Length: 202
Image 1 (cartoon, rainbow, N blue to C red):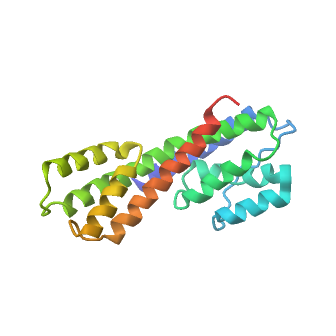
Image 2 (tube, helix red, strand yellow):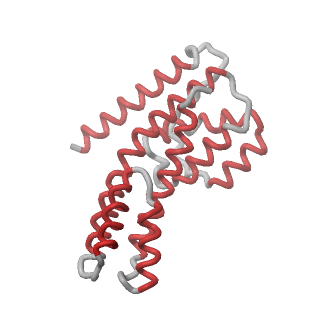
């Protein structure tokens, strides 16, 4: 199973490389595409901002080095860094071919982030269901929970509010692991919003 998965990732990486090179007009085009696995630590969001400020329009080359790893989910543990990179790309001058590359990377990244967040969403649902199992909830509160969990496919605000109020009032116990996972899902949805801006016609 692991061998098959690794082979799929390798084939996907080659597919990404080929597609992005074609989008850039081929290997002879002036838009240089440097796709590689960096293997280094993921830069923090403040570091990314400083790089853009220092490099100006050359920030494209810096960002370009990370596109393949981002598409393959290697940055998923640091959603803030993904958001920062794509936000900073909006602040430099890009030609139409560079924009096409970013759009393609954004589409790919959205797909794999949505897939990876499904496990977090399911775990949050299971954890919160267990947390309220022995709580004495009114019918109104039960409806609030039902609505909050049904919204988890795209937003977390209602569940964050319920958890905050109910844990403060002693209706449920505080659970820092649950809160950490919920915060991660929230950041994931914010990152998807940033990426979706790049998929629109520019």
